[in-house]
Amino acid sequence: MKAADTNTMARAGKVSWALFNPKTYATILYLLLSLPLGIIYLIVAVTGLALSIGLTPVFIGIPLFFGVAKMLDGMVKFEQSLIRHILGLPTPPASAPSQPQTEAGQNWLQRMVKGFDGELFFRNLMLVFLRFVTGIVFFAVMVTAISLGLGFIALPVVHIILMNEMQLDILENNLFQYFHIDWTYNQQYLLYEGFGLVLFLIALRVVNGLMQVQRRIMYVDESYLQPSPEPAETQFHAPAEPHYGEFRQEEQLAQEKVWLA
Image (tube, rainbow, N blue to C red; front, top):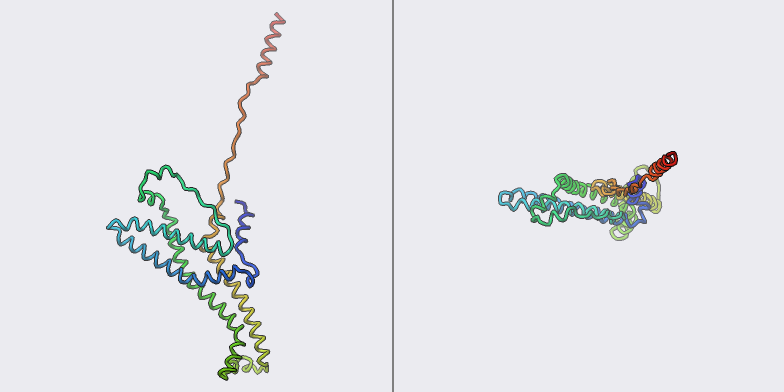
């Protein structure tokens, strides 16, 4: 694959104009669901591996282990497809099954053993654990960043409601009073609104940055970054032509000998 195509694929998933881009809010929903999904993935992986190891003497653990490996691969591919769908990345082409004739005469256990890839299994297992960790960290970072921005934006409305309903002034002892800055409530409202809007825009950029980190952690661009095999060029061999020039020269020499004779 050319370097220009790789750069085009890398730029395709980046989000611009975060405030008005639907990808941003789809990313927020994805990060909100990342915490429960990460917990479910971890529980299924740990439970499946523990059962397969514990049931190995009864022979049930061996096919269960290969089933867990297949399930881990399905989890990773599901996460990759979610990220591709959110970021609008194209789906990689499906690989054709290899050697279908040789697998036809094998039973299901032989096919599972032959299709098992140890390196891929450990990679998927590590990705499931990383998915659990990033689900917790990204969820906490996103909720904190968005809450700060929305909190400052909603502060004037909350202050007005509390003043009218409960006679509670939450802005009575603030930084303006501490530094003896004589600003009216309306002026403070404008400052809080502007500061909250800036924080909210920064939070949206942080959310999109977290998605880009998750995209790299889950190897979403793996199929794009691998060089695609180029088709072998067909070589046309020209048929061997008889050397008529040599026959012509021999014929001329024979005629000259006849004439001289």
